[in-house]
Image (cartoon, rainbow, N blue to C red; front, side):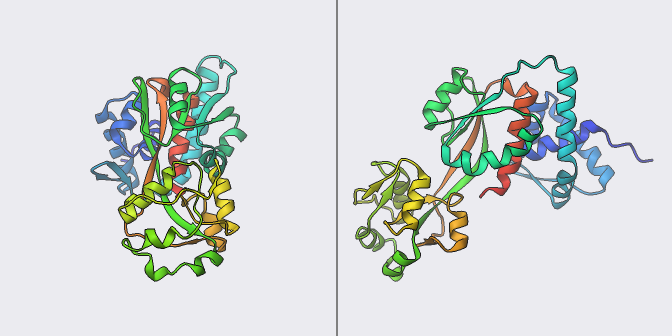
Length: 303
């Protein structure tokens, strides 16, 4: 005899999918891990298909889970919002305060949360460097921070959001001048030193990391142009002012249109991990939990 699918199972399923872990889902939902496992097993039994595969880092969704998520995540989130609105106590009227790097927020986070805003969620964003944003999170200025570094502050919980890949870019015209056959680990630093280097800081943090990872050495040239905004660096690269290293997500559309090109395709490109940081215990709030889970889900499509 078939058992009716319970709403709690679907809520647990969406939470496991977004967090990629039974353990984290149990913590988020304030359930025991056996309860979470039992609910997922019941749902799998009703569907007749497995939903998750266990991996060292947690669980990985199956194609059946991807299909189910598309069908149920909207209704599950909507019902959660309705329940909180009517039974979760009176709202304080304040928006959620979110901090992060301006480039990622404007290009990825804002489009990802537009549907939540349309449904009534209020958000106020602030920009800055990771250490400052995390300190302000700990001090209560922010409710959630998208951080480019793993938080080390006491009382802060971090969840891995997404990895960004760094790419070495030039305009098509400038790329034609650079002898691609000489861009080996041994020769590339000397070859590339002949071309203007564009960076968002004098210390070349992204460029230096790329050079060390791919070439095994530090860049020897000072930047010819410093723009304290990665979008400005991209604009300068497009105009053939020089070469630079940027996150692939930021230049994705320009790469597709052929406005910039990759100079190299390293076997192991440098990456950087983004984290969602919140104060311990705050994810018990329905609005913050909704935003947190929504970003985890949408980030799967960013890079």
